[in-house]
Length: 153
Length: 291
Image (cartoon, rainbow over all chains, first blue to last red; front, side):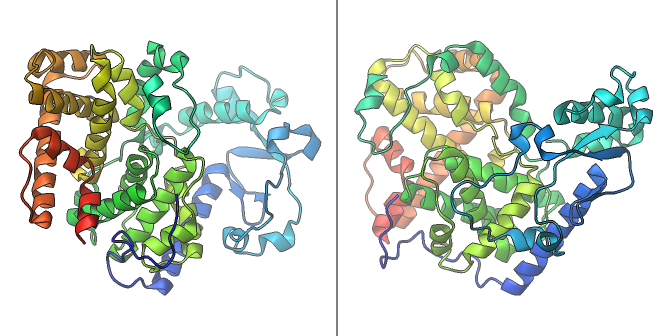
């Protein structure tokens, strides 16, 4: 992993000519926004405003200490966060200075469709709810099944 | 396994884990999940407008050179190519952004697989500073999103040890066979024809090609030809004819790659097959020496 400064190797080369940095930035912003929009629709949660949106899932706010330690925010190593500004372009850091813990539960309507195996009150654990959500979504939106499958890894 | 310990390698390595290697459930699970990480389509036909197959080869060759020069772990390059192909299968990309994408994919693969990963700054220098570290970090996010954060893709390397331990191979040749198989895997990753093949097939074909290539030399034919192919096919539950075709394709890639190297070399070649293989195993190095 050594690096000898000053010595230009054959591998050090530009393959396809000059890069249009403005275009690159535009494409990046476009893709970032569309992915945030995709996430908003998938989870009916507005990640920019950090508020739930209308949809299948019902979001319930929890105190930080109520969730497993794994979800607690922590900083490892340097505190440098060069991408924060780009991650949350609409002034995320001004509005929400602290880490907000949320968990999600299903609306009773969809849990009935999964057979009502568990009561919605008992779903405080994030993983369980998510798994149930997937099976519920499959049943509720049968017409979207093919599309969902296609987008799965 | 003692041989591995004797290698001069500054990197501290864990010993091979017999619990992982001698348990068939591991191989079985690898075979079950490998298809999840294949690119969704042959993207030159259906997604990309600006990018041509020869450009993928260009960026792949460059990536391999960078990985070799930086002495990356063997898996880094094929894994980075897997990310690149999966991204290109879903996102129409401009030609002038392709090298940036290649750098991002190496960045991610290196972070996943290496104890001392490649830095953004170093990768930008390798693009001749045509991109900035900040851009690399931004696009890292985009690529991660499009890959749905599924980075732990199965690569052909994951199968190598599982295959090798099931073959009756002479101990003294094992190291060389492994090295040649790894080289074949890297060659396959540079060639788009292999992008949609399951990693187990590439691994099996590469091991087959390595064994045949090495044994042809000393006239020992017990493990060559059809019996070897059948044995290999059984190990990874591959169709014999598919595997045979795959191995032939791998050998053809080697031949065309050798031809390329020769053209660039403009030198007289040694005639022995082993020598040819050795040259092919470091095609970019040979090129570097010349240039």
